[in-house]
Amino acid sequence: MEWRAVELEVFGVENEHPSPEPILAGLSASPSDLHDAFVSDLPHLAEVRSAHSEILQTVGHSVDEHFEAIQSFQPADVAIGNLGGYREGESLVLPLSGAIQEQVQLEIASHGQTTAIRLSVKGDNGTDLVRTFSLPAGTQLGQAGWRGDDLILDLESN
Image (cartoon, rainbow, N blue to C red; front, side, top):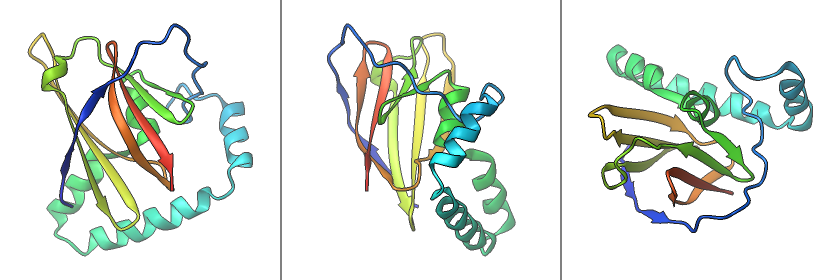
């Protein structure tokens, strides 16, 4: 995959935000939310087929590349949830209050039908964080930018 830098914009700070949608991954997900998502979104099987074909392509590469890809690549909901983020309509919100905004890098790459985002964050306390995650099937990154200390990733449906 070839990575391209994404320019981060500055969004206006709004007084009211829509209520966050539940993250449907991780240990904090409630069974009723998971069941509702499963029943309401039956095309999720297309994601499974896509992920399966991507894994079959990955297996064709060397073993080291395969393990590196598996360990560093998470679905967006899992990665965002692990960072304390949440969904807001069609956007993903990442609270990055300790980040040096000028040193936050966002890169995007596509491989087949999978679009990946790589987020590199430098903290004001000297910590570095790099996360790579895939966007939900059928979406692409519309724009990305800052709203206060939150990094907003606006997603668009294909």
